[in-house]
Amino acid sequence: MANVRPPFWLGHDKDFLYKPRGFNSIEEHDEAIIQNWNELVSPDDTVFCLGDCMLNDNEGGCRKLNQLAGNIRIIYGNHDSANRIQMYSNIRPTILGVGFAYVLKYQGYSFYLSHYPTLCSNYDDDKPLKARTVSICGHSHTKDKFKDMDKGLIFHVELDTNNNKPWLLDDIITELKNYLNKTNN
Image (cartoon, rainbow, N blue to C red; front, side):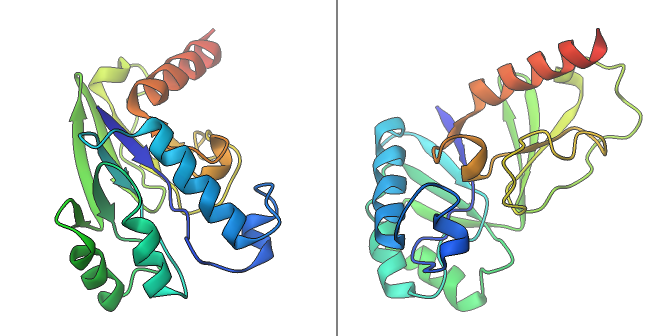
């Protein structure tokens, strides 16, 4: 099973981040994120985190990342310094940094995973979904998973788009099919 995890910023003690998500403190926020993650992710699952896993408290962030189930592949975000990237790889062997982008093939679909919204298709709206590449991103802190669909096949997986939970690729595929069916009719 492959999951996609948005940036979540463990330890980022700024209320502009955790209050809109429905939490009164960063501690409450981080506990809920860990619980939501571990309810959906088994130890054998692979999860792609689209950058910015933690901010400020690196030591506490590493402790919290270590509580997350699964094989975690971290795509670097704008807050992932060289020092932080090195820390990710030191947490445990099942947490790996994979670079600034990653191409994932899943059940005949192609996904371009990046922290940032990325244009991956050009004038291919008439092609079936399996013949296109879907950009999956999480940088913008939007609540609208289809925020950039006017620019291309871009799907946002911010925590705010899925009730503070990881997205399953199967659910992303369903959401995209429904969206494309609705817009094509």
